[in-house]
Amino acid sequence: MQLIIDKIFPRHAMEVHIGIMDYKVAVNSAPPALATALEDGAEIRMQELLGEAASSDPVISGVRTAFKTLGKDPSRYRPSSEALTRRVLAGKPLYQVNNVVDCGNLVSLMTGVPVGCYDAARLKGQEITLRAGAPGETYEGIGKGDINLECLPLLADEDGAFGTPFSDSARTAVRETTSNLKFVLYGLNMDVAHVEAASEIADTLITRFCAIDE
Image (tube, rainbow, N blue to C red; front, side, top):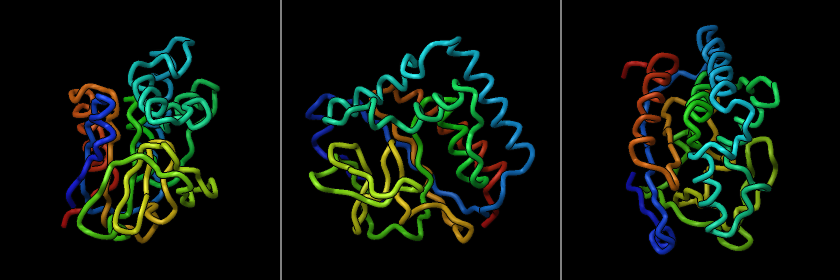
């Protein structure tokens, strides 16, 4: 699929680096080694921030600025990486969903980069567009009901919006039957080197815990 970036992002002089990786996967419960990695990642994140707020992380701060620039309140609609970090700082365990989603959450927690895990078979068309949500635009979020997408940075296919760095849609969610994964890193207002480093971490985790040989 071809990625198209809407002109609104360069118009605001916003640095955008979207990482997209494709994998053949088997979706299962997280193995013990991944559960341990999640616990270790949470502990490392707490030590890194040393009691500071999640929003003090420069990567998370950059994504918050992107939301604000487009017209979305980042304190009401928090980037997913910030929400994960806040959860850890509050002493709460990370949700365990499945091996694929858990890998995505660990990447996001460790790097501050919001990520999306999508069932590629449920995407329509040959193009994916990064744009801002239109007035009145919504979709059913995963476990969140209808989400107001207006002014949120989002990805859309032929059938409309399917993912944001806030919360993803139920339509393209990873489920037990998913075999083709599209893994997305939302690099908004951050250096390309950081997105590349996050993609390397993601590749290591997905390859170890989720990927299958074609």
